[in-house]
Image 1 (cartoon, rainbow, N blue to C red):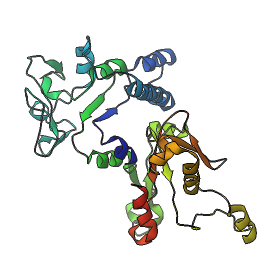
Image 2: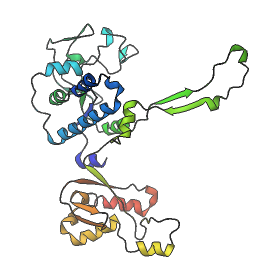
Image 3: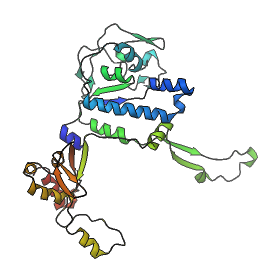
Length: 333
């Protein structure tokens, strides 16, 4: 939310799916004579490398420009939904006789928005079709995409236009959704004559978290589960003489006091920095990390030489009294 407050709400929502037919996988499969599905460690490493390259391209490259040639082949291979609907009622996306993803779309000449604010993309009837599962598929089944990203990464990359601010709610739900779970039981097989034997159902019940091989390897490699850029720095604040002090249970109270009585916090260090640096006086506490960096070793703020960061004030409940009103003041003063 701090990033949205600084830059505004997002314009695009992009997802990428690993492609088991990437050339890197095919070379490994041909050499080792083993399916890539049996080597989740290899697939995770390759996907992680592709993901880092994609993030670099989005930050530094220009991918939302003119159309490129040779697009038809990759589009029909990776960005076609279905077939479903009347063409294929048994499709996994079908629920209650309809596609849960609302395909096929309808042909329209201009992009517009429906009553709920969702985009209706331009889909022209160009008379072009591709045969998938013995069914002719036209432009109504094409998933929104970016041509350059699709051609470079050769994978299913869905790109959607964001027209509503509540996409942030969906983004957090997407990142923090619960893991897959499974309910399992472990028991013995009894004959009919032994049906009177007591069975401990509580002991035999297990509520387990399911980790697929790919997710297991991803966590073993300690890859990021989610990532944000630019970085967000949490800024603490406190009332006079109410800063937090960290100590061990065995520490002597006098020693704790002497060690911390003249120690600057991030908040008091910001006040000291405003006396030294004139450039920072026009910035609020939240804006300060954009121009200055806090050195934890020396406990002081210094002018930033490179990089960028966004500040975010820690939460204060309305019942906290003066601390809550101080947070309101720090956002504007």
